Length: 546
Image 1 (tube, rainbow, N blue to C red):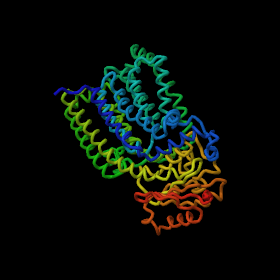
Image 2 (cartoon, rainbow, N blue to C red):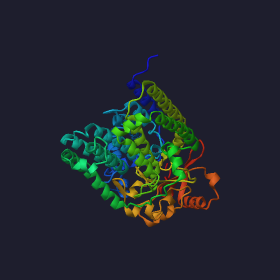
Image 3 (spheres, rainbow, N blue to C red):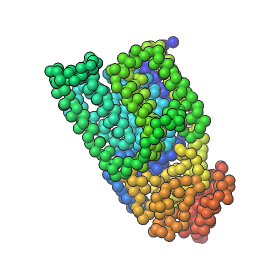
Image 4 (tube, helix red, strand yellow):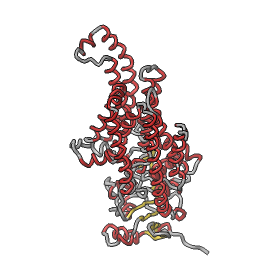
């Protein structure tokens, strides 16, 4: 039987990877609906047909990161329905990530298909399902930056310099974390190449003598120009990063070196953790088997691995990442889930290091078969999972036609769910499609997006005094009546999600029900399971005439 070509294998698996995006109405992510809502606000904030948007929001364009997704969604939403625009955006990510991984290692040496198949394992993970779209595209541009640098590192001229600096800036405007990693990897790789250039014989007994020799001085002078160009290329993004960190604070404390939970997260490849522990255990077991196989490969091919490490610095990037992972805080500069984010870059370094070599034909076929099978298993599990979540999301938005356009909506949950949960911000879909305001969109409160709440109407300040957990927890600890009394705004609709009968008796749930009974009327309960209850403010009650 003839082995398919690399392009056929890659195209076939990429098509399969797109099935979860296009087979269902919704892509179940936690923050994805909020991104759509913010993009819609940017498009329509000056539209006189929807004055509620300019009443609650104001534009705040600046040079902060997290702009890429909104700049991409806006033109898509001008020509496509919002849900389709989101699918097109995510299609670009699903296709681009494996291709960028292959590009990162394919030249001057490396196996692009192996890297692409490894990159596929990063697609439908924790950060994707959290809806961290900017972070996800940051990974893509980080890989593109690494691949481009590997091609032009020895011939960095003006055109290449401009392209490299632009890639680093684009990466920054995707996500600050990606830009930091790209700058770190380029810097470490340049220092490694500098070391190899200054001491090509690897004889360090008379290191200073070699440097001060005529040949050594000549080598030093040859490094001045490329070193200066590298520094200037990373300078714009570095300045923006420093301003952003100084503005938002660099909080977070380093952790103890030995941390069993981090080891488990690393071995289980925490980015795979999704909506259910059962999925995490199943996928992580496959990864642990793969890691064990990799260790055995290193034992059997030590000389070849050592030879590759001498040519490429990515083994040392990997080791630096492993050490950093064990000590970084889980929250820094107001960014959460640092460990789940950083573990992706640990795996990315492993991906590049492993792929920057040529494998024996038999071993290569086995790796392709194993990674292809793992991809199929992962996609199969996600399809089953997405089908169930789409049924519930369909129930969540079942009352959309009962909501008037140009109104405010607050979605609350009576039961807390572990992250990621696609129901936390799913009201963003409703607000987008009805051109209203979703009062549980946290990004305009935190200020990491080009839209901000007007301070007097910011629900996170008015109802929670900045303690956003009060609003997003299940059950919430908020006074929805008090919001209308303290501001000139009003919560027009309240969407209550969760098994209300089983939560009756909880003091926070009972307090919420009393508020709803006082000023709201129940206008719809989802027919299938009753998990969604939609309430309308009594001031919006319509009187029948005739």
